[in-house]
Image (cartoon, rainbow, N blue to C red; front, side):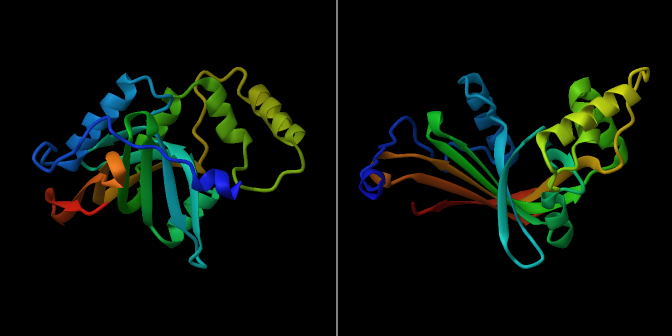
Amino acid sequence: MKDYLSKLRKDYSLMELSEQDVAVNPFSQLERWMTEAANSGIIEPNAMTLSTVDKDLRPHSRIVLLRNFNHHGLFFYTNYQSEKAKNIDVNPHVSLSFFWVELERQVRIEGIAKKISLLESTEYFHSRPIENQISAWASPQSQVIESREVLEEQVKHYKKKFKNVSVIEKPPHWGGFIVVPILFEFWQGRPSRLHDRIRYRLKHQDEWIIERLAP
């Protein structure tokens, strides 16, 4: 396996990235790349790695789905009793990353995660499929459970509970976070590992410094 992995090689040559061509604002650049990723047929181009740090300074990473973004930040939703949410309560500094191998691109983001308003979380919750709303009630996310059957019984319980309810109430333990960025890095694969890396660093509110990094 060691020999196999050491011999794996992929030379990137699809596109290039220059500081003259990127948008002045990183959110606009992200929108440009996200649109191109979506239009290229990538499955779930909004899938991103969320990295957090717990109270013992141990890092944790997992995939979550980006559900919206604007010039204020990037939004995702979760159970507020999950490990990721507990980590954010202790240390709100997080990192996000997207990797679109088909486009030979990566985006890395650092920022501060904050809970969004109850109204925003409720509006999004009610936009989800009914089955997903039931799942939010049924799953004690990140907690140890005895078996799959325990989870399925919980689903049956809440389906019965909400059978005649026109609007399912949002669980109090479920909601959204916004990640307010302080840094973006856009990476475009290039031949011979001489990749293009363009970084945006926040200087003042809505004012970003654009820099090229060595690969």
